[in-house]
Amino acid sequence: MLVVSYDISSNKLKTHFAKMLSKHGGVRLQYSVFEINNSKRIQDILKIKIESIFAKEFDGGDSVFIFDTDLSKAIKYGNAIHRDQELIFFD
Image (tube, rainbow, N blue to C red; front, side):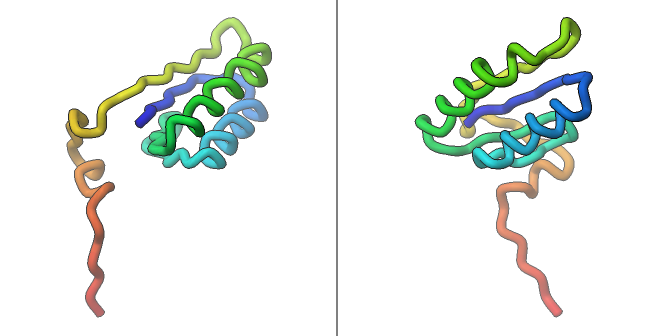
């Protein structure tokens, strides 16, 4: 699993970046934090796109952090605890 956190000043580029993450299986955890739990191939494609398409567009203050993490070691608090559990709704 990858966790991608970003701070991009251009709203247009920020929107394009978020849509690209979503397209590659990204789930928004917070406004500028996505979880990508997809195949290694898709994760590699995502990294290549960030490097080849987005990195050259970044301003001096823009940043992207990609954390490659082991899901079994993730600790969750608050609403995040329920994110991976199935919910059952009763009428």
